[in-house]
Length: 429
Image 1: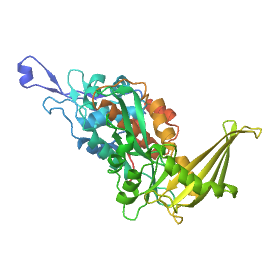
Image 2: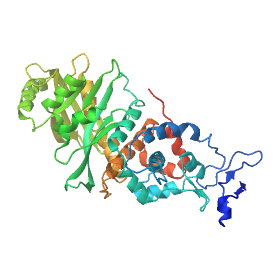
Image 3: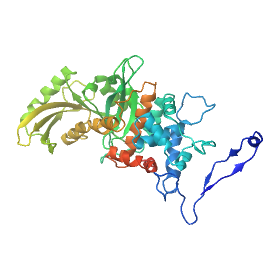
Image 4: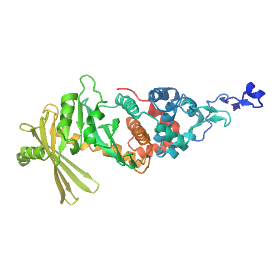
């Protein structure tokens, strides 16, 4: 039942009656009822975690600078970003979808987010799609990335051996172009075991992601006594990158060598050729998708290899067979790493090299299929970057809580946005 209160003041003397915000009265003997069809009829704000889930995240967003002037501001940045994140947890991909989902939020949720009451509409106001687009273009995205990355970094799980393993890779947003008519590329770092993105930077239009390793990982801190291993594709097999990782930061690296480093590739190839005559140090055999795949790994020291901080090299033979046992494909991968024999075996190297491609499956692919990143044409300054950051955050939150079927989970949340609140409650490790 709604209880209305009418206040007569200066507005009444002008012939206008000001209607105060309605209060929600619980029915006798029953919990508070939501006036929204998507909400569970028996949930209260405390039941849904409203009291615990939002302050931490909203405080984070409130610390992000923006270029909007405070005068006449209707929707604070913390409100807008938090509402957008909850909508994206419900699968909203485009600005119109974000605005539509936020408009359908239960009024109790909009109030907790800090929404402003409208006396004429007798409800809390929510932004339209143009407002979300403008706000995303006003955000200091570097600070936003730093704040969210640190927040997720504290909550990321570690592998069983207590090592933080990160995969780094770039992703082109195919529908976005810069003012210099260059493609818009984001370069990110993802935790292997969880698929959580803890750092991301925009690649400047006059360069490529190879030069941005320092800019990306400068924001990634290691705890006392913690080991960090960075895996990457062959494009990042560079002397400067190896020196920065192992020499400057004290991280370990695992690099794949291809034709972009012919001298190094020939040296590692010659070093590992005699090993192939012996039994592999590690073998994996899997049957999947109508074929049989095998990975055979040989590992040896890096003596005589001229590369910064190199300790070991390895050769991985990948073979593919059809179900009748006929070989259909064979290729070799050459690996160099700063990990010593004490810290990495053939098993470890094989696992880490294969897990590097998890950034494609757990992050890039999900952003394209769930949030339709490549299909969108967003050319408003920082808006595409902010949107990608929130997509990474939504994906990371889902994975932190053990959800791997991301598409289905977002559909589940879209039917009741209050379900997203439990995902915002995360514990620090």
